[in-house]
Length: 123
Image (cartoon, rainbow, N blue to C red; front, side, top):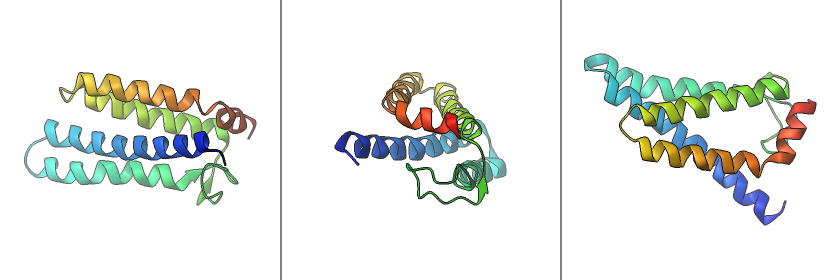
């Protein structure tokens, strides 16, 4: 695994963590009372579970293991939906500039992940 690939894997991990935090921040800033606390915790956990459970078997960018096997296109759609939710969460949480920067980092990640995207689309 080359240095660029390791750097991109780290970027993806950081983007995943940032997406979870963004979704939690959205819940925190848009709900009140009991729902504010519950959704700030539950929404990121649900997203994390979806991200962890649904995977393509033998994905070289992950452990290769999966709980529920899906095809590559479905995995790509799940990732893109989660990242889209995170960008929207930032945008609607009065963090538009951060949302735009986050979107640019996501684009950078997928541009440098062309080999992975090709692999996913063949699965």
